[in-house]
Length: 429
Ligand code: MN
Image (cartoon, rainbow, N blue to C red; front, side, top):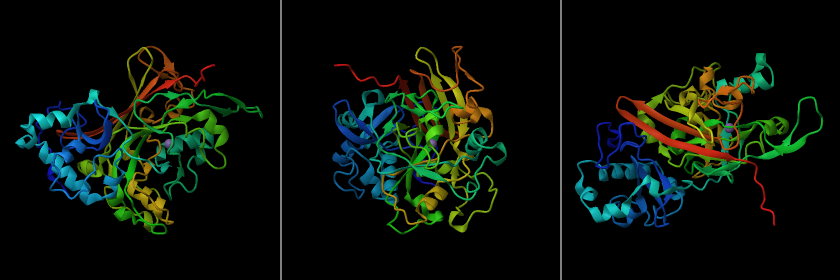
């Protein structure tokens, strides 16, 4: 259903460029630290962060039924728990407050000064307290590429893959917001032909281009979520870089799956873009290659057309875009993922994070990891400073962006960006 909030013709009295990811139609949610060191829930228009706690305190949400301190918290979990109806009322109200023709706040300088901050004055935090993190493996192209490299090109997909969105349970303690640097992980690896592992820095450090959705309280223990209702329990989406150490992964992952190769860091973009804002960009998932079981038969147009890009920027150098992909390539959509996750009665809580899996497209320039882009290191990726990369080196920064556009309307996620530091060295006494 189209809402006024999504009206592409609407303008704001906050100015922004046409190519911003955050026009008045976006209204994402995040948490930030203000210049006065106050932590607050906020939204963003153009290059300005808006303090929703201050707006609430000054009475701008009085017509919306909210608990008194809804936005004066350091996470969005309670707001997300309130459900879809509240999300919509709040987005509608924010759209109205910042509408070009509404003088309410526009002409109230004293209030504006307390509510609006330039983005470079605030420090973005994790938007939610993430209780549980699950990572799917829903790109057929990625699963096929990895299966081809590590197992057997003729049977690259395992027999279950076309019948269910497979996943593993990740670790939430190492999920970080954009801009936090990451030390290269160390661990056990083994060289081909050897039977004795060695310990040391990962030599095959990689990114995974992913997106993730954030849930509300969805179900009680034992109650599955029907696939056609799944979106009612999804608040919105973020970009996710699921950092991976391929050499550690290869040695450790049989039989229980990834462990230390993945849980040293996973980074997310700080603004959660709601499914409502993504509504104009719905699209169909790729054609089914096998009939799906009824519990996975999702509604039409359950995927989204979201352009994705990855840049590598060396310590001294300009960014090189090494990958262009799209969320719509995913074989399994978010409704199918959530329905499958809960079909056995597994409960999902407010603030849970569900990663898509690496989003690779059909062409070599759309592969969402260095493992695939450099094909295990056999085809180095050229950077525009003349150097090349097989995997990620110390002091490289990896930046991922995502945005949708249609006509004049552009809705984006901003970016998730992290620099890699050398292995952590304890300070000597
Ligand atoms: Mn992953």
